[in-house]
Image 1 (cartoon, chains in turn yellow, red):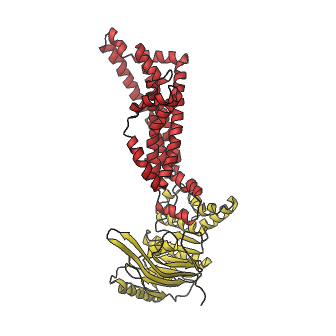
Image 2 (cartoon, one colour):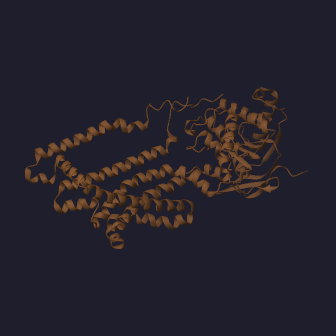
Image 3 (tube, helix red, strand yellow):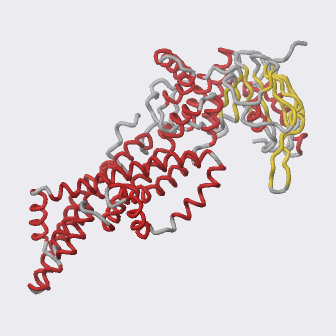
Length: 260
Length: 278
């Protein structure tokens, strides 16, 4: 077998808390193939976000490592992009200039920046809003901007940390549909944390179920639904069956059935 | 809806100064009137020199303004303020950046800086005059010392208050330190810095006058002292009022700069909030 694209190997992480060390991740291992969409689900505090922060190079694991094409991710790098749960935009920059930030850092010419930002604005449905400041944006629009900014970096791996977690249900569903559309267009490797099982099944090729703290892999579920997919699938028995299965796996992992 | 049409509605700070100007003028005018009439009614002629009437002050003002005295002394004070502000601000910004970025520097400097604030600058001024001479330098140093602290505190607070996720973002973009400085730290800390500068700008006037009180041959503080020695109370009033006008102008200008720098923070209730583009 060849080296997998993204390899999470024996990953453990703990934090120093008031009551001694707090273990967040316990020996987590799984692989992600190039171009694969993998969702991570698990109860709150199971270390999903910690895993993403490690993959982003922002956090050093206490044991184990994450390898990208055989190379350990030990510091932040441009090959990996991250979208936080909160959009984290620069409030003094307009939508357009926020999206242009990674391009500016890459020292692209103003003309290239112009065309690329225009493409990205159109891609995330923000054409016409480029001159707005983040304070004027709704949650969904701000998160679109953050997504476009992460895409501008053109990362090989896109990490999404509950990107729709702060949005209302309707906006959330629409954003999921758009993400699906964007992913099916350029098939970028995505590792996404979510707490919605339906969202995970709709989007992912595989879903990794983590247990409660300290998180370990309970089960990895293959999502066999054909592509291209659309939110219309959400009501199909096929998807519901998989979602039900995931719920069971989650409750088996921690004895707590609430996952939202 | 875009953000360009609702600027007239409630909470638009940009209209405040203009809308309040007539009231401001009215209030100042009333105060002057009470002053004038109060002196006229209450004080008998021999004691009137203790509180000159607005008319006398105005006459002295015109006299000092036209013969160049006022311009010369105000110019000296403004120069002291400007140089002091420049020195103090530069020092505070550099040290603030250092303290915000280096724990070691913070541990080493913070106690010294905080303790130094317990020293009344007025008590220090004579010493500084001995050290730096009775000319410009000593006043600039007094100014710089007064100006330093509010800016340092604000710069450190501004830099430390930056959203850690924004710092993470720049780390992930592998941005070198100078790009982080230019694209994140300066714009993020600018409002706090300007707020500090606004406070310091008015303090600078105090620094200059304190320095001039100790030893000087020119400056508005010198005019006040001279007025005291000569019992020329109208001149004292002219100097004091000029100092007040300078402080208000500096404060006003810096407030304007601050608002311009925060254009992006204009709250506007009628924009796209809640509406998703199709």
